[in-house]
Image (cartoon, rainbow, N blue to C red; front, top):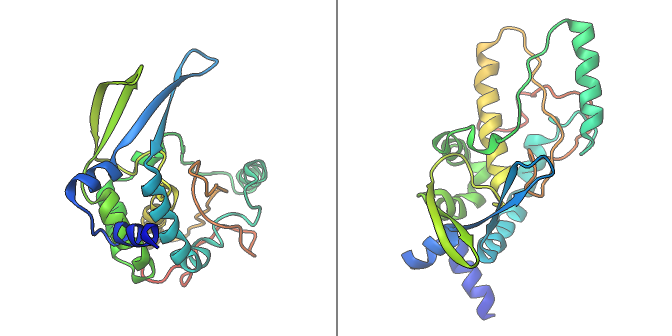
Length: 220
């Protein structure tokens, strides 16, 4: 019961400033890749993960409605999505592609927060989002257990956040809605992603195309 009460307070943002600062902090680990380059891995606080999972569970029905037609109907199989894109390119002659590498900070945090707070469907996310992203967070790099460098996270969503894929996708679909209004003829497609923090969130839907139906995500 005590843990439940603590998690509830955290999820509602009822925590001291020092606790909120710790929940927003990220421990960064840098791994060396086979090509001699480096891959930074961010580890979110376990308490932040817990309250984020609570929020995601509460908003899951809205996520299924909003993103069900953005996955080509092929689930998490990125190869099938690539094949479809190539077929469309040969049939229609042109294709616009978005490179998703390092994409989490490609959309401004302001745009993401605006999309989240601008739609009541995402209200279960509001308090947790405000707690974790409402102000800058600290990213710390440790070497042999000692903090050697730190910087402030102010753009996009932080790597390693449970809410990262969800918030990034909400911000992205809001941007796609704006593009829809500007394009006379459009076919806006999404690509399969994962819900484990490694890509665009969402579920495979019944449809086989990624067009954005007008009523798929009310409020955008």
